[in-house]
Structures are given as structure tokens and as C-alpha cells.
Image (cartoon, rainbow, N blue to C red):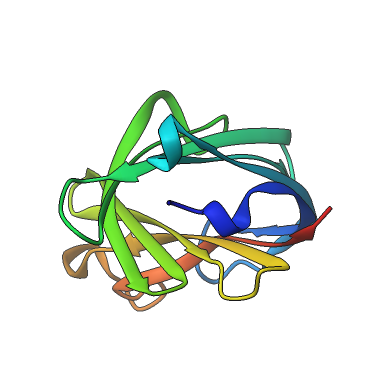
Length: 154
């Protein structure tokens, strides 16, 4: 079952930055993890605060892609991904890490990862992945964390 050991309510902090050289602006955050459809779907509803635009929220629903270990997801966020949700795909990178990628144009990727190794902590990390042909000396190719949400059980 997807995220079954993480069900419940979570509180903690979220660090946000737009560009890789910006510092992470840290504010409070919450999340609620639920299971649906007989355990075949997991959802994470979360809230966070943008340093200029205030309170934001998002939802990601994750399910099996039909192949062992492969997952698909639908994600929307009031600041990052609106009005149309993004489709992501990926899978389990380790027994306790889910990693999902979505292409948003021109080779740019968005990655959402969940680390559930510790049953009393949940980490959601969102990375912007810069394509090699768009890299500069200030913004290197590859992933950088845009959001890092560290949560504990409420």
C-alpha cells in the first residue's frame, strides 16, 4: 500500500526557494496523508507558506503504474502548479523513498520525493531539474531543492 505507514496528520517546516543560489525561506507547514481505493492510492494534502504570496496548498495522489515498483501521480499546488495539474511518474528508489518526475517543458523536470524511512518523520522534497542546455555558470545543470518539507506526527 502506497504511503500506508505515513497515514495521519503531520506538522513541521517547509523551506522554499525559487533559484538554486537563493536561501531557503523557512515557514511552518502541515500535511495529511490518506489511503484510498483499498490501499491502491495514497494522497498527500499539504499546506506551506510562500515568503511573498502567503499561505499555499497542494495535493498529490499516487498510484501504481501497473508494473511492480512503478508509480504514477497527479499533482497540483496553488503556487507551483496551477491551474492544470501535472502528471508525474517514477517509483520506489529505496524501500522508504518514492521519487516522481514530471516534464514541464523544454527539458525542465520537476521531481517530488517522499522519504518515509523514520515512521515518526516525513520528508517531502521538491526539486527543479535544470537541463544541460539551459545551464549557466550561476545555475548548473541537474537538480536543486526548491522545497524541503520536514514533518513530524501531529
